[in-house]
Image (cartoon, rainbow, N blue to C red; front, side, top):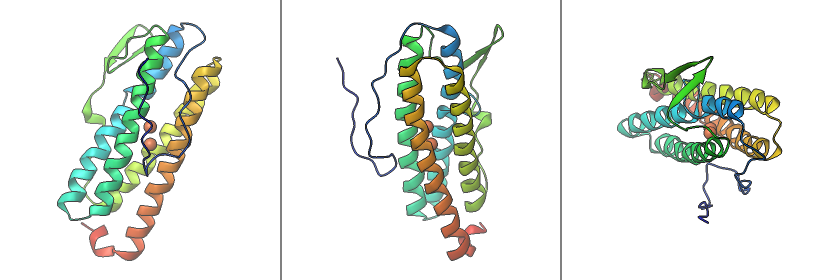
Length: 183
Ligand SMILES: [Fe+2]
Ligand SMILES: [Fe+2]
């Protein structure tokens, strides 16, 4: 069996991820997780948004912020991978779509918040983490499978850490570099 890489990262908590397994197939749970996986407020959307922000911060010579965005984006990829495995085990298809009420909607990058200034972009990233936490908690409350919930709860802990890292960066730039913050 292939083992997930648990290489240490500065952008996730130093706690192992639980084993990705399910009690039984459940299409409804798979559909709930598809929203966390690829929707306008999802891991896929966070990956795209943070990567774009890292490209811009690099261009603006804000290396610390570029590294922060890229590092967190890579952790979101790990979350996305775990969600894909859960969705497959639950009997779903982890395409980049959301299925709801017999309707299927493919993910669009138009939901990425591209932004135009350092503080504007960081506050969008803070908001993305907040929404992710709320959605994961709501879904965990609807999922009566201890294995799936354990994975979600562990992901939430990383998202709380990301929220803290983005908030600290925001405070740092607001108080110490007002010129850069006004780009
Ligand atoms: Fe995530
Ligand atoms: Fe996150």
